[in-house]
Length: 95
Image (cartoon, rainbow, N blue to C red; front, side, top):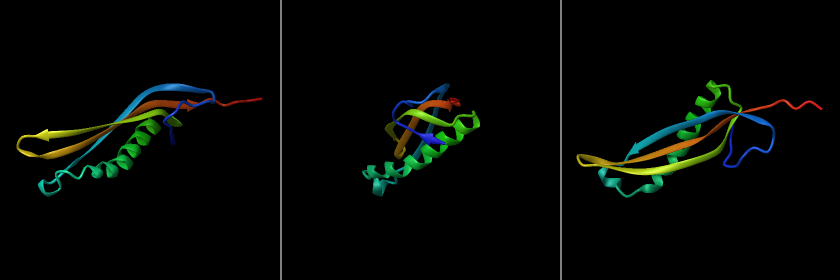
């Protein structure tokens, strides 16, 4: 299973879009530690791979990530990371 931010140059079949989200609550004493986003990337990548694999994909191309800081009145901030891309299945090439 692979993830790529670019398009795939070899023959492939698109299987649709896949997305995944992970979040992390920042405690009040760490309310401005936005570098904590870094720990969310592996979790989102793994979720993307798992979902794509279940659909029979060989990989995901055009992968993009969006970040969001959700402020809740009665709770600390939540860091939210969403990843998405196009699932692809490689086509066999016979010469």
